[in-house]
Amino acid sequence: MRWILFLLFPCLVICADDEIIVHVNTAQSFTHVALCWASSAQLTASYHPKDLKNILNFDLAHNGRMQVIKCQDGASLQTLSKEKNLDYLIELDLQGSCLSAALIDVHTGKAKQVKGIDITGNLAQDRCKLHQIADTLHQWVFGYPGIASSHILYTVRTRQSPSSDTWTSEVWECDYDGANKRQITHDGHLCVTPTYLYQDLGMAARNFLFVSYKVGQPKIYLCNTQSGTLKRLCYLRGNQLMPAVCSSRQMLAFISDIGGNPDLFIQSFSPEQGLIGKPRQLFTAPMSAQGTPTFSPDGKFLAFVSNKDGTARIYKISVDDPSSVTLISKRNRENSAPCWSADGTKLAYCAQTAGVRQIWIYDLHTKEEWQLTTGSTHKENPTWAADSLHLMFNSATDTTAELYLINLNQKEALQITSGPGEKRFPSWEPQLKIR
Image (cartoon, rainbow, N blue to C red):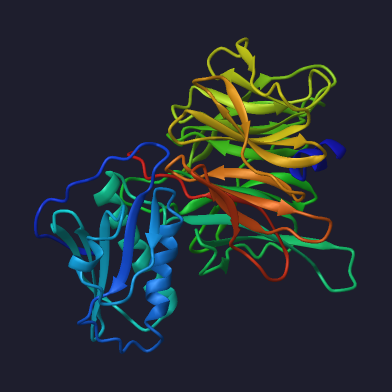
């Protein structure tokens, strides 16, 4: 089991008054926005209205494309137009329980508005509505929605009792900012490596795969995020680990030692039918262990880990031509947990760097590797957001593990979880796809 341990633990109403002129920025520049309450706002919510503003401010400040400039509530457009480099004013208005948000071009005065948001007084529900507003504003400015409404799967590992040497881990889900966390599985055993399935257009991800040790050996299960209903997928002998599903949901990749060696397998798959036909061994090498497969967005390739050359490195393999294997990670030893970005251009992975596990990025166009994270704490298990800009990963010390948010334009990682238990194996909800 040493190879297993090594690989596992290394509703809006939108009104447009006029067209917004989008200011095109270079890759290194940010769109500057100011966020304030309108002077007419009736701030009488059942909790402090600043909570609403703070949620939206967080979403805007961490979307990787904007910088939020402080301004006073009720500030006039005329006053703000004198602010150097300011592009947009985002004005919140609250009338009773009805919230609206206006995106105003500072240079032209043209505006778009989100109206009819009913504030319930339940911050968890209202938080989701603020995330939706943030994603709509992002869509208007940049042409594609933000990631504020997305969710994260992860595991929480705890001792069965304070004095026990027995550990359990369950699958949880939270908003991308760590709020609204809830436990999904109640397995009572070790659960690891949850991963969302792509869902039909217009629907949030509802199912995910994970590995459970409830029968002793690790086996792959399908679970519903709402009901927590489990369905075992694989009945092969031995250990089955690290499931990954392509975006079409028609192919499953996983690691199995059914042949005596932990090798890479693929098998036809359907969320409704489960596994179809027999698995096909895609890659094996003498006296080596394979791990953590991840599909390219088009489903034609897999990236995975192998120590076939003496140290764990990242390789790329063709699903249709297994003889075509390419070494990806060349700069570092002891690489793990590759994750393919949704736009197909990058791989994120973990690599031992001066004695510390750090997150690295491989650019598939330039063939270059570069280090994203720094610091003395180990970082593991990177997962991409649908925008191919944001990443989530978990930290790891001898006693704690928490989830962190980072993006390629703002490289200071932000801790989003806290509290009891070790949080590991984050999986970012994928972009909605047409089946």
